Length: 122
Image (cartoon, rainbow, N blue to C red):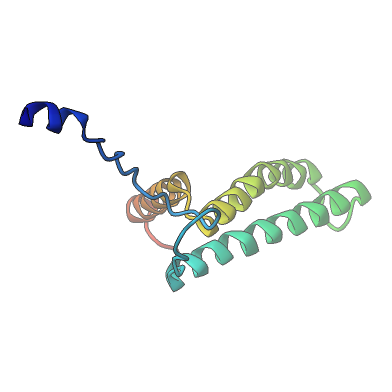
């Protein structure tokens, strides 16, 4: 009889791990200062790149003081491709997205590796 009683008891629902998102969270998690600073750095650098792109296209179209505007225009296109990545990383870090943390850490390791093998400017 006791075995029937054990089988009729409701089983508890499995607990899903909480994802660190600001929306729909029962507890508000405080964002670490370092994450805030890195996210702000990504925002500021992305905006700076976009302003540089606008300035570069303006100088390249008007001729400006540079003789080789193709190089300037090519750099502007590269910056235009990099800026959305910085914005996405800033938003992702702000919202505690795991992919943003992994990508930021990967870029930091890649940057340190290049700096180590190429040497720092002196």
